Image (cartoon, rainbow, N blue to C red; front, top):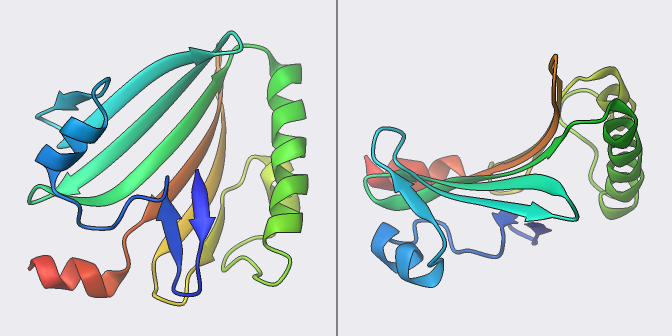
Length: 148
């Protein structure tokens, strides 16, 4: 879901600033939320809820989130540990901008900055009746400025 290139990060290999209408065509299961200016895909995978969110600014794709929602704390802790291990391997040459991967296990977000100044963050969340792991990728600042 997160791809690191020489320039920076990409979400599901989608080009930044892709037009909303094109994405609606390419993602037929997505539902558009007018108030939040985003496309949403809700699905079950291996009995767990997964949510993919595509955010837009002036009808251009600027950010994406992939959320794993779990009901069981032990599943959450196991997923978080696995994700930490995978991230350590994947980002061996690219250290986080804030916190360390060990902080994930303490329910703290970890953020990386791409060469293009786009961000990728991993954020754990513990609630009363659910646990979430949120992967978020944001457009580089330079491309956002082009929209203004």
